[in-house]
View 1: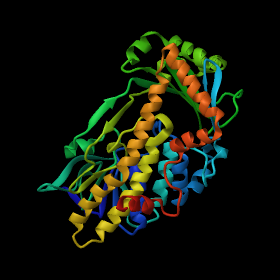
View 2: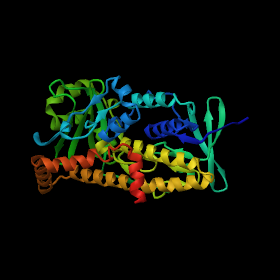
View 3: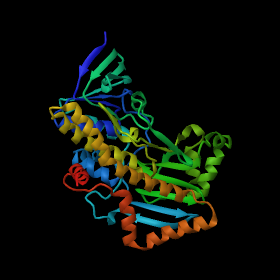
View 4: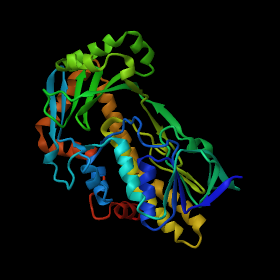
Length: 415
């Protein structure tokens, strides 16, 4: 026998987008069921960088202090250098913002804190491990989700289903929603090691040499995540060169870390590859279903915009769904909410994508004239504090930190 339950909303995917949406809607007194394929959050994530915008949003949701209690890491600055020479240095304390610092928050910690907060509301429920295996439909409308759980098959009947299952969204595929994947020119190999004692703590670092670069991100509790670019699809050739090729790359970009890298990265199994691509989804919703976060608009990992936009997506959509559920013509109101959600958020996402792609292009410049232009650009920005504030502000402070940022975004569209 297939068990059936009902909810005001069903969320497929227990990542930042899905859980923040569920928290916001449950806090408004609605019944929300989250379907998560993994049994717990204790697994490897790469998306730990939280922009100041999202730090501020987490504070507004009452989540920042519980995270601080677990000693998350603040990033106080950013340094970019090329061929061992400094180009650009940023001190985040110079930004006049309520929350000026990016944070490095391990996603298992973040997801647990969100889930604990949501669980205080009687309408919240998370089912895990549970795999969404099909969408329920009535004519052309999605009416819920069919799941496989450890207890058997489960159907969740809901007027709205939220696809929040990430960059490889199965929900998007089951719904037959068109999407366009655009590979970038590079992939990234990541590894983690102890934070170098010779480095000033809590600073992001980017090292460049021609078209090669590495990003160094301090991470909780006292580690550094290192990502360096390889050619798109070049993992097999990179590994064939032996682990010594990785050591040589680090000698090239961060020679002071040579012995530390060799001690902690002894084989390719100590690394993880991230396939770099963006996904454009022309239509984020169909009747009864809405995509959010990476499922609706996969971004590059550069500058950490993915989690930032996932959280804002969740808050905007939760407000619109809450209003639609109160409408007597709920189905029509929810359909309008899905379309309005895309109208509100798509422009901001496009701005982030264009910013990322420009930065990607800058990092991959290789010819002497092009690299000279890059060095000149960074030094010009560094030497003009108002310009530096403006450029970095566009990258790190994209959400108005006002009393109600969701209402502000909705009003912008209405205007």
